[in-house]
Image (cartoon, rainbow, N blue to C red; front, side):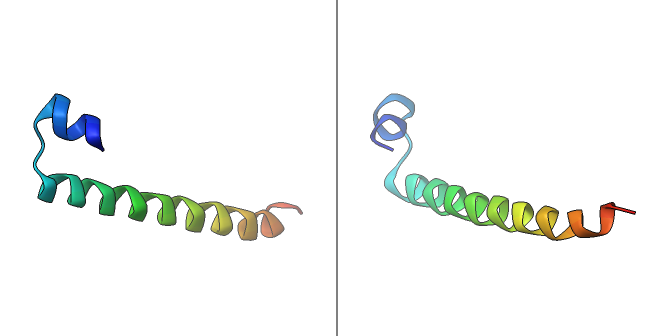
Length: 45
C-alpha cells in the first residue's frame, strides 16, 4: 500500500478504497471456491 501511495501518488482515501476492494475480492473468491466444491457433487453421474 505504501508503494501505491509513493510510486503512484494515490491518496489515502484511494488506498482505503483499494484495500476494501481487495478484501471483497478475496471473500468472493472463497465463496466461488466453496460453490464450485458444492457443485462437484452434481457433476458425477
